[in-house]
Length: 239
Image (tube, one colour):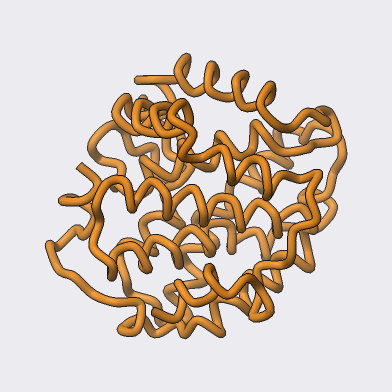
């Protein structure tokens, strides 16, 4: 389970032990928000979904904060992706998509250069686009080869993408969520680990995730995920 397998080496460590201070995390997210304006609400939501699932799974307080930091930083490699690709309103070309796909490895490499060595954070940033069938990127990992946190986050990230406003889709809310749930379930054993989808869908059906979709959707006025952000989420990075 995520609660017993989150730490690759069985160790427990706090984000206080990480070389990346909360202010640095906030600054990195702020840089990405400035380059891609759609990132702000997305970051809030995936952090909140991640914390909700992690709390449900019973992870330790320290591991909860590690996951919070990892979720906030998951797309940090997009800082190095050209704005013309990030903000393109239409479908990406094959070449553009290859550039976009590089963000996972680029984010991982950036964090290593900055001195980050927490495997939970590094693994989630690098592997959140892997697929259960091995057809994902950047390393083509499959099944249990994919780190546990990245397996859970892949579901979270996909659900949020499918319930967010895009140039080709303006729908949010319950109807969009139902379509997204159907897509997640159809992707079991191809894109997603069965247990991760089952847990997410169960929490959605019991109303444990609806408040995030309702109050932090793209049609709402969501503050930036920075040092001026909501005290509850900000304090989670400082714990």
